[in-house]
Amino acid sequence: MNKIFLLVCLTTVLFSCSNDKNEAIKTCKVVSVKTLILTYDDIVLSNTVFDPNFTGKINFEYDNQNRISKVKGSFVSIPTSNNLTNWRMSNEAEDLITYENDIIKVQYSHNFTSPYTKEFVIDDDRLINRKTTNFYPFKSEPILYTYEYNGNEIMEMLNGRVYRKFLLSAGNLIKVEQIKYSFPDNEVIGKREYIFSGYDTSENLLKGKFFISGALFTAFSKNNYSNIKVCDYGFSDNVFKLLNTTSYTYEPSYDLDNISLIFERECN
Image (cartoon, rainbow, N blue to C red; front, side, top):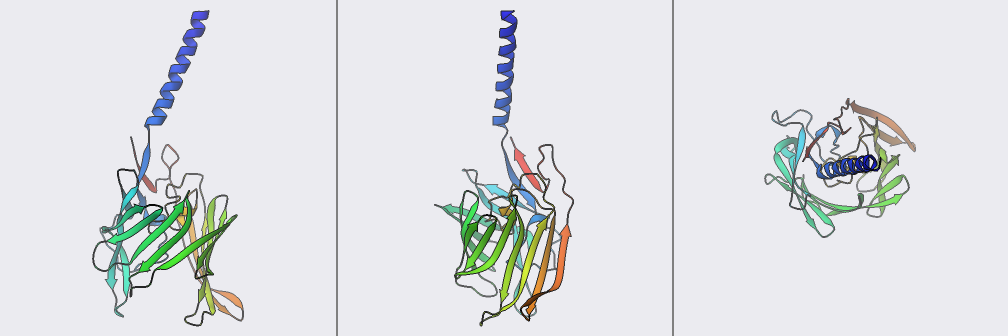
């Protein structure tokens, strides 16, 4: 009886160790993401000019510390009749990501028509501030956005004033509200709302990765949305009036680990 008990215990220990070892060995990293969950709120993407070779996803390369060092899939400029610049997505354009102390820097790398340079300070998946220098249609002074957290509400501050409000529920971003002001007298003229819904229970592999272009909104959430609605309002007689609404929905699917197939992973 003692020998049988010892054999059972030994088998159990070996099986447990084997499982622990296999779980420890299997590590994964995201190597691409489909752009359908990205929101390019600071770039005007052309609705008419597309790159037929664009794959519909962006790809990541990593440095020797397992940090994202390159995003393959960025913007290519399209000259327009009024000499401003619109953009289309191309897998030929890249963003280079570098790390300097607590600052993450994003440098566009494709041609001489650069849309931006960006810097981010992120602490434990929380965005502390971001600095953007725009180069279209002309170079701007660096713009610093800071973030104030109060429960489920996050204030994005610009020049001491609330620029946008982010509302979260159950760890997911459900609304972004941006008040629009006239220039140069700074009177309220309207607002834009981004509304996110249809969240799943699968892990969002872009959480905390605010520095990836198009992922600023997505990076606030722990799960993945399947519906986004954008509402634009005018403002008159002290009332916001809905002008137009656009939305899209996609049907999510998942792998055996319950990871959304909007992500492509590489596991060993």
